[in-house]
Image (cartoon, rainbow, N blue to C red; front, side, top):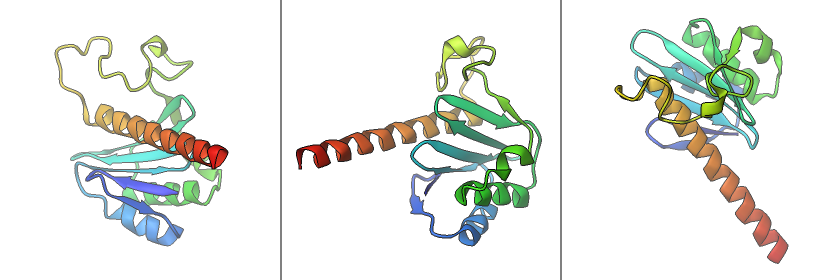
Length: 152
């Protein structure tokens, strides 16, 4: 799996302990995205609280409770280890625009949301859009690799 930090740097994760340590070091107004080919988990550390989300295909979910950074780090480690316990360890709710949620017709990652035309994008909207862009890049890379193998 790969981690992407708010400064754009990436890191190929090799062990859960190092991942947990690096998550704990996430500073205010920073975010981190951990992804594999089909899913991602992301965390944004705001000035007063954090936002934890995961994406699974075209669905996006948000944790509905505030979590201490140590718990967030443990959830990232479980996600990295493919330990499904992270799914039931905290309450998740579909985000606006995710299939099956209110506002789904607007779509995930739209920067124009209902009632938002006169406000700037929130920190959460910014990291959501960053995650969507990263997944598009990964999909493009996979397609190019597949074409190279096919033509190769």
